Length: 533
Image (tube, rainbow, N blue to C red; front, side, top):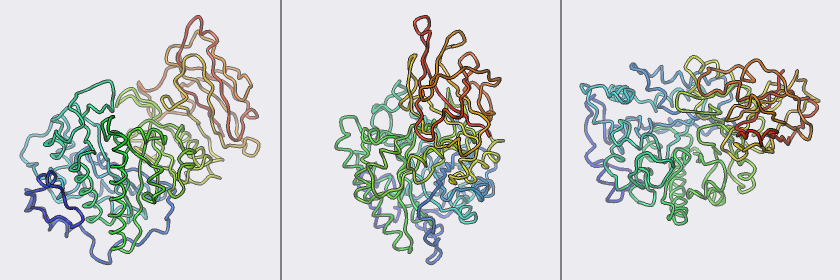
């Protein structure tokens, strides 16, 4: 039986999961209590409390991205952090998971030990084998990432997914860990693919069950004791389903108690190490959406349970985050606006990637609306050849004066409130730029429709002034990273010249209207305004 910490006493149902894990792995790695002592920092060796208590730019680093190569090395893993050295990123949120696989030599979740070096390569997902080979050879991606953070002056958080939706339709998918695979009684339901992505009939863990909460507490306790963390992020947005619909009200109190327990745990560890550990929560993009899934974020703030609230659109980028409402309903925690790596998707390989002008525009928009800092999610999931060049976009991204001097692309993406809309819509867009103080060459507006709009007249009014259509040779306002099926073609686009004097430094009202709606209706999908230097 594992010698568990006195702060991680599992209930009887969970204890059976954790039993029988002490010994030596096939690769000769120390396990059980020996592994804990081998990885835990020695007394006096902890990173001192960070001077940057109020982080300005947090960067989600999902370890899934480092395992897609046959020959994983510590140097390769650390290269993902090394490139951030001269950027504004001041804290790395390290996700130690490949979906549900823990990518470190865990005692709490011993799934990794069942790998055998002579077993056939998994055809569904070979990367799982690559990661297991690295662990069994003595490697530890979490330790490698921590060391790179220390070498590059970045604070180190564990960002843990509090549920995960990937491949729930396939119970044999290799990255499902044994805790999930062996305990279907912990699932909310047992349905395969369904139209409702986050249905309470799917195979998500049910947080009403004490063994589920005990497992997550135990794995987080293990990570915080093995590694010299500066904080923890509870990633409630990956994936946002925890209770049956009928249990949401009761579940809200259950989840608050769980967050309280995590807070007490990291405070205790921080006190032992002489440092202040921060607790961050990554949550859906409005307060109401949080409450609908059982997360009472304002109550967590009022009780002083959380230090940082990462307001997230989930996967596709949006500036329509509830920054203002989170500021209004909280008093203690710092608010972070999350920026994601795509503005549209039509499948895993058909994405419209963010560009640096979109990042710059979104960052300035978030700061102007009251965000204390920025959060970067999936930044490295651009095509591999663009990872290093895109890192330039993280330099001075928290410098408001600098952002005001740069070209920008303000984008209203679909499915976050304003768009899509049928034939007519008025939207509000915060543009903090003052075109009277900063010289821009020109400005252009782009409207995207779902159907072809080639033969349609679509009128656009900016702050009451009707805009003239204009020719734009490319489909994108700024050069794209890589064009694929995720990018719209010309027949679904309209472009307009924007007089710089018509832009307001602040809230801009844009009305879009299909003037030929009676002849041919169309769906308005996205809107963006570019400022060129």
